[in-house]
Image (cartoon, rainbow, N blue to C red):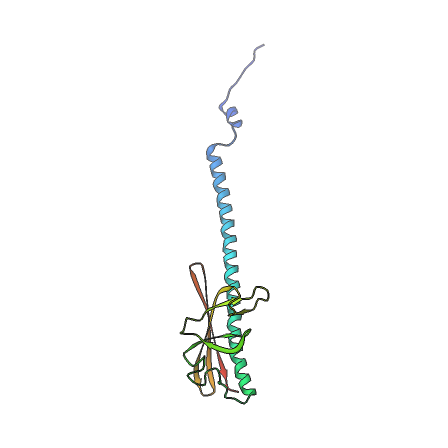
Length: 182
């Protein structure tokens, strides 16, 4: 009986497994997929943080408008001039062109900042979430500045600017609203 043995190169290649090139290609594809996913997650987190800060800035600006509006309304109820204590004369804290700040938690009276851009950082009460200037509360990254300008005898323009920064990036939210003497 004669046995016929045939050897082939193809039999050896079947048993070898992955080549180094195939392994490197698979690892590269895996790294690209993981990097893309992590980049998308980081971008989403950054967008969330920026959106959260913008919403806080919007509400801080709205609070500034409301405080000036409240002072105007109180002046009317007390039969005073509508700008008394706000911007009726040069000694008032929010006189036209001057920067001022309001702290509705501590006082209904605005306070003049030394110059535009110099208002102090807002602080936040950790338990209540209120923003203000109480020195016992931890400082936040937000700075609020209110400026008024005269439109005519019965109308003023209120501009509230909120500045904050994250890392090396500075952000600003500015809102303007007109207030009438009713």
